[in-house]
Amino acid sequence: MLLNRARADDVMRAHKLDGLAALVPYNVQYLTDYRNLLMVAGFDASVGAVLPLRHDAPAALITAAFDTRNVVNAAPWVPNIVIYTDHPGDASAATRGGGAKYAGWGTRPGAALNQRQARWVQETARMTESTAASCVHGLVNGIKDAGLAKGRIGIDDERLLQWLPELGLTGAEIVPARHLFNEIRLVKTQDEIALLSAAAKINEAALLKAVAALHEGATWDELERVYMTDMADHGARGIYLECGAGGLQSGRVIKHEAVMFDGLGQYQGYHGDFGRSAVIGDPGPDVAVRVKSLEAGWRAAYDAIKPGVKYSEVAATVAKAVKAAGFPGPFRTPVVHSLGLQHTDDPVGLFDPPGKKADRVLEKDMVLNVDLPHIEIGWGAVHIEDTVRVTADGCEALTSMETALRILPG
Image 1: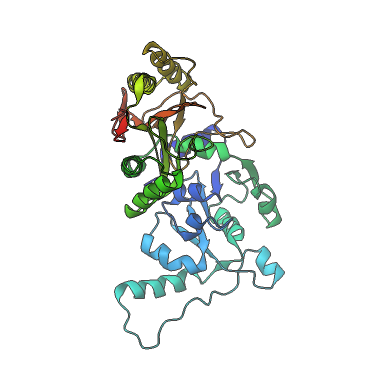
Image 2: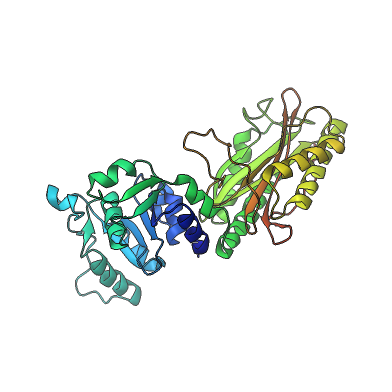
């Protein structure tokens, strides 16, 4: 189960919420254990979820009627599946949440259905007996079914502040709570840790395959294709392979110029984030000393990460170790961030710029990345980035920790 129900309960109680309503796909996946093509394809306001604080009230998944067969296959833990179709053409019916009748795909007359097909037909007929006019209408229905029509509800999409009252939910108090969803998701369940561990390993292997393809004259597009292909070969999705903002400094790979690799990918919605340094031919002392210093910083990070320590304390420890190891010139402050269903799982404000986050105190079963990039225009770029899980008294690496500079012949 992805959802950390005990933590969700604690956060809702602390903020005097009676329940949560989600419209953002990764939060819907988190609350329900369900993921479909609507989420992957990025259709707006196409899936929803309701999580009441009371455990005896039904949690809900809201999805499109054509998705019913996938719901049957996945069997999400939530007891209330709310299906939506389309506006029925009757304004009052739509206001009440009633959708048009679902026609769906037909069943071949006289066909001998196997067990799976028979379940599709039976469950689709049951689920679509009562449909909503849209996903948001369905969200209203799920909120009412959970007994939250007059409750205080935290939402992850601020448009619901307008939409929910417009659709008749006038007795509830609607509270923006995007940051609270992140607050809950910071501490991972064992199922989440297993997915993050798989994502880390697949992502690392794909990035190292791209490193192995490094050759003089290569474009970054060539190398990224190697990464993306290997991710797909292992059932994952590559998001990007970066070598620093602006790309390769010479436009193509050249001998002796340090290259940083930073790969971000997803496995079943969970992220892997990994970085390494490479060079073709003799790296020279400039590259070697910088990478050795970053390695010292990563070892210091691994030793420093444990419950009760702040992000800022880890970052300061890393920066100190990097400089003590002989890093020449200024070194950018390392970045510590949580990892999960988002590249950065940390709570942020609605108008905060990318990367801004609070100075967290580490807790057991948080999953973190420590970023140590260094870019010098006119010289090149090096990088080390790994993923760890915070344990009861330290941390364990989900990536290999084989941080040495990759030197390719040339």
